[in-house]
Image (cartoon, rainbow, N blue to C red):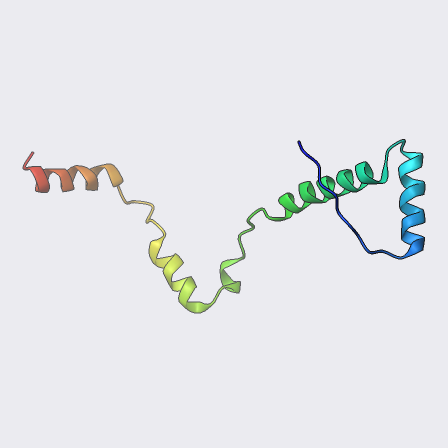
Length: 91
């Protein structure tokens, strides 16, 4: 992958810390920065996972939609589809 230059503005103490940490890890500051950003991105991806909120926490109009779309336990989808096909195609 091609690299590009990036200019960052940080205080001198942060620069010294970055150099020390990179040196202790036997890598350049650029590689350290890349590793940190990639690690942050991996963690960010985990946080993006969808988490369903409890139904009671949603607005009432959404609760009504959800309740209206929940299937009933005794509903036979195959039988209804077969009935639909009979009506449509005269089977």
